[in-house]
Amino acid sequence: NLKSYYTGQVRIQHADFEKYERYNPLHLGVDWTNIEPILAKNSNVQSATPRINFPANMYLGEKTHGVMGVGVDFAKEEAFIDFPSLVKEGRLPETGKNEILMGFALARDMNLGLGDKITLLSTTATRGSNAFTFQIVGIAGFPVASLNVNTVWAPIDRIQRFLGMDGIAQEILVMLNDTADENLVATQIGNEIESKLGITTDTRSWRDLNKLYGMLRIAKVAYYFIAMFFFVLGSTVIINTTMMVIFERMREIGTLSALGMQGSELTRLFLLEGFFISVIGSFFGALIGFIGIYYLGKVGLDFTEALSGVDMEISSILYPETSVLTAILVWAYAVVISTLSTFIPSRHASKIQPVEALRYV
Image 1: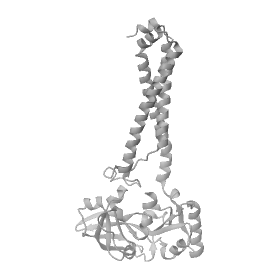
Image 2 (image 1 turned 90 degrees about the horizontal axis):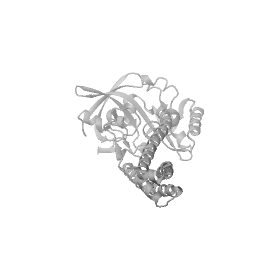
Image 3 (image 1 turned 90 degrees about the vertical axis):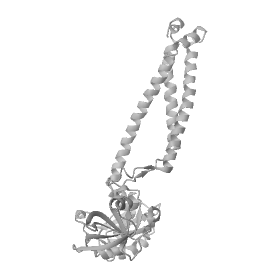
Image 4 (image 1 turned 45 degrees about the vertical axis):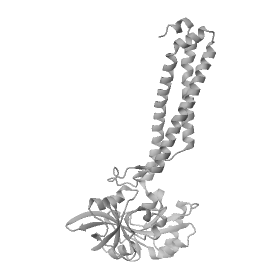
């Protein structure tokens, strides 16, 4: 989602845009017309697309509503966003026409549908104001909840006309070939633009741009510690249950001992019993868990409504990933813990005299 909807693998902006971003400095754009040929000649670049993000007030009769507008070239966006698959109703806006694509939650909240017209008022690149009327031709469902709530998409040529940015884009997103080094190519593109056009840009890879990605990397470490905690907690349950089973069978142990079984034989008997029970039980437990996760990985967990007010680059539909290796490791861990947990109580029980063992109720 980060690369598709927000940053690409490499993002190109005016060198000062981020510094003044809170003021919506549309005049600090990048020359898409001259930069596109440079990117086209770069063997590491797979595709590139211009975008313009702008805040606007949406007027509908006497009602107003704040939205984020995005001007895109729908044809060039194919490598980034699969717009046709996201459209729930209608179609995509056409180049050269005042048409927009709207998130389904925004359309629902504003009671809008296909064919309705809205007026957008925004600040232009010359720091003035301008208003355009657009017709809704498509309603879409995006995997990022915030895009469904407050975002509209329109052809970039109409947005450039609307905001006074002919030939200019607010940012350029770039996708690279699989073998390309993102940081290296970002530096290369920035240097090439500066040498050929004489302008300095802020060209960085997506890993350097998004703070959420860095937070997730830290969170991943925390998740491992949480997982370890639950593993230990689960282990105590297994150990406690196994020990209780052994101590509840003291009369049986006494009987077997009275019949002539040696202590080592008793220990081995219960050790093998615990092993085979844990093998079967852990297998079915891991299998059921694997099937459940595999199913959820196909259908997804839909948090669209729950995340509708969350402005984060997180997909509202989560697809858990299955891992055969993880399932095998969990199964093996459960078998080892269950088997070892029978050793101590069975060893202790085997040392008790038959007469004492037979007194247990």
